[in-house]
Length: 365
Image: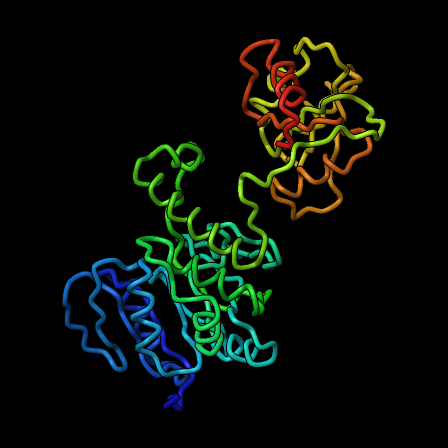
């Protein structure tokens, strides 16, 4: 029997004032029927609507299936981090209204982050066909339609036996047949969390635990590709055929950059010093730098004709969007080879070695 109130809230519980404040907000909402708190040991929380949910692994497929099977409301409000400080006026109503109006499988919104005395607006990207990264930013709170969940689990099978990626698995399944909609307005405020440094993020994949997570996510994504008919077994891969289109140069070094004034000059000079038997250029996509990077790039481009300095018209591009700017430029070469803005080629012959490999193996990538 579907409950009169539309929402069941689900969140992991961590002892402390932030979790308590999040629970208070949910308990006071007239739209929330019940609150499931996930934790690894039995605890007593005396609050209206709160139910304890003990589980060995908070992110596993087994846990998420147990949660799904236990709710009777039309929607599941999934809060990945219990750090919500406040809701904007009619926030939950707007989530539900969007889902009802569009028939959404998932709804998410922009939000504010509170950092000491500052409130920072945190806008999110629209979800679109092809937004398949496991780390796509939905924010810490999303609304899922239980009707959509029931349909996709019946059509595409139960969640895989996973330890970490259950929500990723469910999201991909939902996205096949249902809309994932973005409310482009900040509807809640969260306490700002400590972010990993760039160095920590860059090398996180080397951690053995993270490698196990990545293998699991690859299994989930491969299963998704098979379900949408996009999986190509290795034996069916085709060799890249030479293109007859007359390219301006044989190869382009693609160098996306934003605010790297300390390293961008050396990166470009490293590319310029490459010794090859073919013509090449360097396409620098300067993503609206504000620290002096633009001046460094433009000064070097004025002295060296092989440097193509591009500044996109759009201001909301990530690294993928910058890549597309370079790939679709008429001066892009037959082979597009990325160089990070803080990296250097190890030898003057690196570019030649890469292009030789492309030629010998007829590789597409």
